[in-house]
Amino acid sequence: MISRTTIAREVTATGTALHAGVAVTMTLAPAPAGHGVVFHRADLGGVAIPALYDRVGETRLGTVISQDGVSIGVIEHLMAAVAGLEIDDLCVTLDGPEPPILDGDALSYAVLLEQAGRKAQDAPRNAIRLLREVWVEDGKARASLAPADHLSYHLEISFPTAAIGTQAFDVTASRAAFLQQIAPARTFGFLHELDYLKSIDRGHGASLENTLAIQGDDVLNRDLMRFPDEFVRHKILDAIGDMALAGAPLIGRFEGTRSGHGLNNALLRQLFSDPRNYEVVEL
Ligand SMILES: [Zn+2]
Image 1: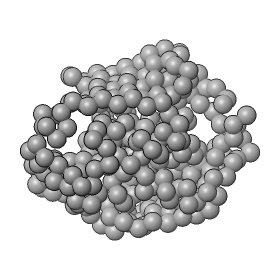
Image 2 (image 1 turned 120 degrees about the horizontal axis):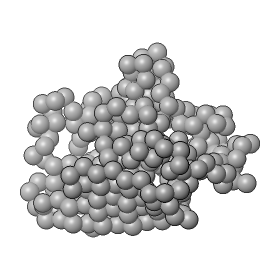
Image 3 (image 1 turned 90 degrees about the horizontal axis):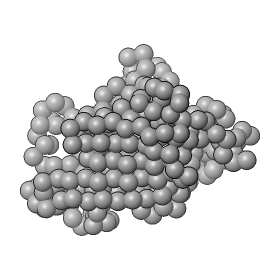
Image 4 (image 1 turned 45 degrees about the vertical axis):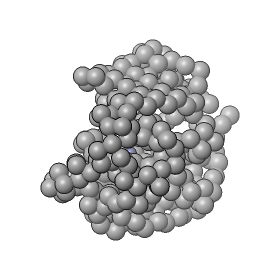
């Protein structure tokens, strides 16, 4: 039997919210077996928001979860680190509207989680095994989950800038592969969209320290890049974070073409819309 896992002790980090631009302190704390990952807004009465696909509202500029009128945005990078390190039960407390963006990657969160240590729970770890393929499409974008013996991710992206072009990446899920190949990949943005973002009161915390900034065919802060194909790796990071909202690890093959948070969430809704699509198995 593989046990569910939580962290051994509480850890705290402070940083800037990517969209709101305000300072946020985040505390990660151990949680009992079966608790899952639950977020709390300490500044808004501590309302508990489970990190589950059916709590997702907006997805245009990051994945936002809501409960009783209280929202938390840009949870996908932290969720990717939690899923990538195979942590099942965790209590996340924030005093603001988003986790701090830190380095714009999942490695910052993974380092924090590793500092917190792992603690095995006295309960078996369950997974959601795909029994048949499910997919969603939106124009040229597509995302699918298909039966497979191991969890793996394949993603392809194509952007009309030489800074990105067409990139594809494939990874079979493991803690080591996540830490080495996916977690360091930073988020990215287009400079020409930044004025628009700020006009709708978003992107206030984006900086050349946490976001790969693309202008025309160049990456302005290229010295920050960790991989030549960092953009598609970051899209896999986002997909891992979004799939973590299934509430348990998946066993199957994820394939995405130009997919983003909206399609990722639609894919989970499609998966859970029919119990014949999956079965819950003990690992
Ligand atoms: Zn991202």
